[in-house]
Amino acid sequence: MEEDRVYQSMHELIRRTCTDLPQDILDAIENARAAERAGSIAQATLDTILKSSRLSRERTLPICQDTGALLALIQSRPGMDVVLIEEAIRKAVRALTAEGILRQNCVDPLTDRNTGDNTGQGAPQIHCELADGPTVVRVMLKGGGSENMSTQYSLPMARIQAGRDFEGVRRCLLDAVHQAQGQGCAPGILGVCIGGDRASGYLEAKRQLFRRLDDVNPSPVLALLEQTVVAQANSLGIGPMGLGGRTTLLGCKICVAGRHPACFFVTVSYSCWATRRYQVELDTTGGIGAWI
Amino acid sequence: MDLIHLTTPLFPEVVRGLAIGDMVDLTGTIVTGRDQVHKYLASGGKPPVDLSGLGIYHCGPVVVGKEGHWRISAAGPTTSMREEPYQAEVIERFRPGAILGKGGMGEKTRAALMAHDCVYLHVTGGAAQFLAERIVRVEAVYLQEFGQPEAMWVLSVRNLPALVTMDCRGSSLHERVREESLAGLNAAYGAPFTGGHPR
Image (tube, rainbow over all chains, first blue to last red; front, side, top):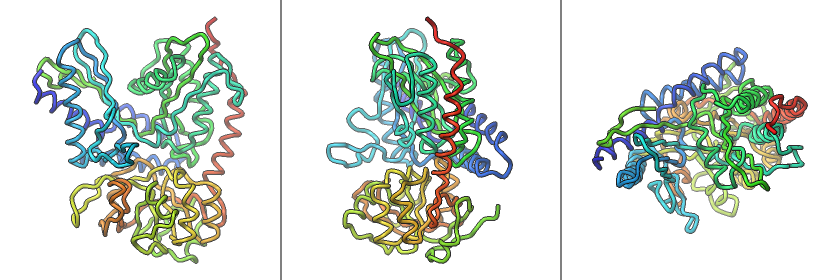
């Protein structure tokens, strides 16, 4: 791969992620708008969201002023390309911060100072997975408000009478939605991992947010659980931004990961309506081969 | 619903006329203040501008340009609840007319709004471009040592749309939705998952 082409690709991938709300999410918000009562606060709120998202796309400016923390997942064959891509991501992040596309969102906890360019110890967060086939790069910009609403349950949990089964998982997910109210910028999307450990649960839950909203989980029981949680969450009346209404969740995406027999974690990555993620396939020169 | 036009400075008699559910638009001067600014103001710090009657906006904008030529490129609200430990004190000491943010605030702030004729205005989270359009000018910036998103930006706004969700009579739309949704949650808990669990 060519260094400069890889850089241009990463710059374009991150810029688009920040400024162009994915079509499946826009469509879901349009549907939600149609489902709300005419003249309600909920409908007015969704109107504002739709108008703002169209403006950001037209002007290629940030959808939300919290341009989030960047998570990148690289899938590649072993080799030097991975190093090139990682370096290109860091360089693109610094450039996009200087351009005013990304807000300065990295604080060094030791000094409490903003690093000013969105890079620092462990930031941006880049994970690499070795795999055969074309090189794929996935990027997510996740805001701090919704990240604060993410949570992890260890079952059984007496407070919500959640046992170690899917009924217990359902209770966790509804509790997470109720606890969040509007604070994670509802209508939100839940990425969920059942199982794993304390660390892998959060990453797997977040990875679920890359799934298209209109896909169907290949596991029938998980597909039913996803549908059930969305329908029941939307019956709570929390509504857009927590101001009341019929749309509290746009989606719920659940995966499982092998668990230690002693552990039963349910991990929830709460994402706001402005869920920003894109994925690309890179060609052999480092250019964007396809948006996937 | 009719839109109520508000202009800063917000006088107590105007604030007392507002109730939860009122849609308003605000014209005048607001200052941004997030975690660092609130911590600073609540722990004895002096505000660089007189805040009386102004709006304090929980917002960390994206700003481009340089000294004297700043431009706001995105400016939606941040979660207000993080300022709950400080907000009551800031209201009591500096008497802003309105607090703007998202997600609502807690009991201490509710009491301070009542005691000092202040109102909480909810701004749609994430709608950064729609809101940035209503900011006509950056008047000044202070406390830049807190970093760009955390600094105090003094902004001129025109027709900034918002919803009254906590009024100075003690009502909170957030509290109402929380209570009603708790009833909904308990009802949903009563309908167990029918998919079963593989055994």
